[in-house]
Length: 354
Image (cartoon, rainbow, N blue to C red):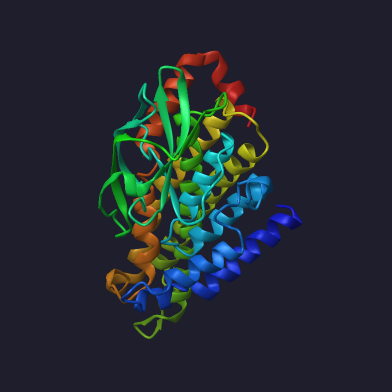
């Protein structure tokens, strides 16, 4: 990480610490914390991190943006920062200016398709779109006769069915019924729905890895404070074993997500090597989320399941993010297809090249 990366990440970290403290949010009943948080993020230029300066964005590097997402994961952030960053990135690829306010992207599932009709309107249905009900605009990858296009759509022109993910964050179904986009341009070569899925999968991998860091920190601190049978539970071998396992899962997720982020930051195309890195990261981070959440709750016992404790803010989001932009099962199948298509002789050279 460069000095500039550190500055951006530290700025994000300070904003999250000031406006998104987990304990404060946990006690909030009306969501009043969201507006000042978003205002602070907007003033710092973080939502439009990947939008060039000539398009009124921050123009920071891909690596700097990934550092912001990692920090957001450590706070279990429940606002559409990652989604707005992805939307800005997608629109910038087509030279479309990003509007002010919250955005999201569609499709958010590799199985959904949005169609560009001959009259320039969009049709289709996208499920599990994060924060669609909270956003003002959606950046869309649509497929037509001439190939992929990138469109900016006003949420008010779509039919949005409200839904919730495991963490009770918005995960909505968006129906495009012959919607006319605000702006639309042909997608550049190599920028298609698969590219969006890879970017989204990496964003979620970084966020999951961040939540695991927080789960580990919370669990270590709790085990050092909690006393049972006249001694701290951190002294019990079984608890020490669980904490070691949690540390192992956290390290594995951080390594996988960090490697994929580094590879994509230094690449201009979504080639097989990038596919291998990102797919592997999403698979490993999703597996770590499942195992890590179980271990953290086991260390905490019954108190970790209560709404009053902050642990669930991290465990539930890590588990919910597993499904966004392709589950680990989807990416495992796709990775298997890639390896099979390249042939057995190409497997080791591809893996070793990473």
